[in-house]
Image (tube, rainbow, N blue to C red):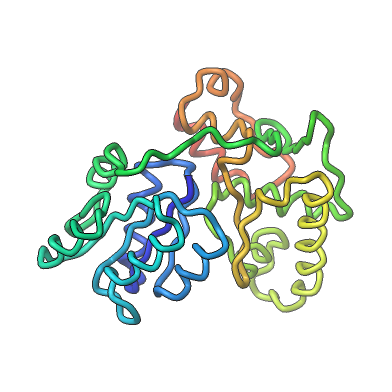
Length: 263
């Protein structure tokens, strides 16, 4: 499921995204701080649910909802606001829900359980991904080949981030472990990014990647991934985890700690 969240206040957006991720773990959640960025995204990508703040600076949230609905007629619009003045307009738009701030996991969960338009979760799985033990990725049971070792690590990191969009700077700081000299790795990063996109295109799996200017993410619904199954409580995946996670990458220790806490 693709979910967007729009709020022009940084802290409010972070809180909204956090609440959505807690209520819908490992669905893809994309956050935007202005209407034009959100519209640019939905013109190029599927959108199942849109959480929209009504009081936006560049475009009223009601108008934004109309624009998004014209692109994706069966999108579920859920308004978030600190005011009750707009409930009438929301109903006129046949919105799926209306949340009064502060937004909480419980309020999001309640709205997600009664979406106006049904959302299909039966997505075609384009790749099989294994994160328990060493990270490996397969197409039709054959491991993918990459030109650079960093390409495989880049895909591993995007999988680890569970659908969140990651900036180039964040990726460089993580993969090269060098936050003080990001500029020296930019050229290599471009090569690695290009290698990843080509390798996925070669096996017909380019749709797993979400691209935005300076950012990358994965569509979690298109991956058969042990990590995502584990976090969703899949009994088979729960049995497969034995305390090892992406062993070849030191940055995987943080996620491993969260997995261990669920044992």
